[in-house]
Image 1 (cartoon, rainbow, N blue to C red):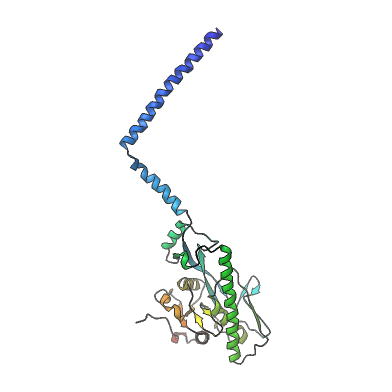
Image 2: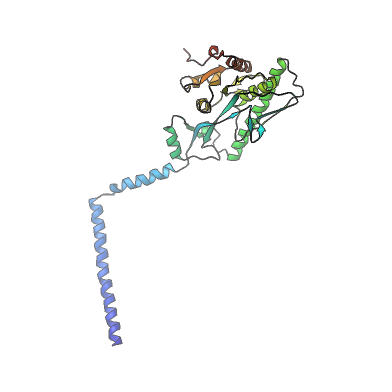
Length: 298
């Protein structure tokens, strides 16, 4: 009886195996007929979709720039004065003098995907530019940060020198004045002019802001020359967003200013520290309407 059962079981297993192979063959023939009727191009859609996803999540070769935060150079950051002055008497101003910044993604240490770059193309408050236009190809995150910090440090030093020259020329004794500047996560040289104006305002006590919120940008060399900067369109947007009604712009950036001024923001062109100082005095005294503006060259 036991032997009969074993033989019967074996016969059943063999029968199942013999029936399975034909079914597999039939399935493969069905699959083959499916592809005969539907050629490989029917898979093109899914394949392209997968490839598109891979491309979108891949690192981009572009830099995405957007309006960054602003900082009142007359105020504090993390409990420290942005412009810390010792050796001379200083004064407070009821208004604000804002330096403006640009947030950049896609620079070393801050990667951006192609999807993010594509979205930025459609954003009127963002710009997308090739990486090689912003930093050298192959530059490391460490070297990028080092270069940016070096530019900021040089800008602050030049701003202090230009302010001292200006103050001395206007009868102030700055022989014992010492200046240090504190900012967080801000690099580059474009805040030079606002540092200079802020230092002058703190020492003279002239209330150069007139109680208003005034923003500006531009490099400053030791002799008081205001130089061009990048991203001024985005910086004007950031200034307006944070309450500025007036904006001092380098004369050499006028071609980027015309046609892109946010509504409600008054832009004044300046080329030197003296012009920037005079502009603040005019705005404070209610005479800002007579100040020079950027215009289209004929």
